[in-house]
Amino acid sequence: MTLLKSTILSGVLGAGLGVAFAASVLAQGTSVTIENFKFGPASISAAANAPITFINKDGAPHQVVVTGKPFKTAVLQKGQSGAITIADKGSYNYICGLHPSMTGKIEVK
Image (cartoon, rainbow, N blue to C red; front, top):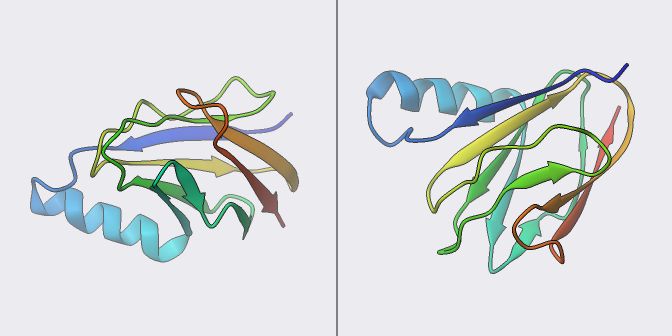
């Protein structure tokens, strides 16, 4: 069974503790930027159990949904981040739940 944990890191621009926590998560995992209605990079490799952080730099809201899995981030407004952690190795496709033409792929090693 795939263990996929979704964590929202919204509002990290406020308290210092939140900023420190977000910086720690980004330092230990992989990050994907959402900008101009695209994921960048669209294909990534990540270690099992390492956080994959999605950072919305778009003016529009976005939501990361792992295809075929019941997990997703919250809707991310501009400046917000959401992270998922995938425990099982394999390939995972994802889309934006609000804009399904936005796609990406995660290879967990």
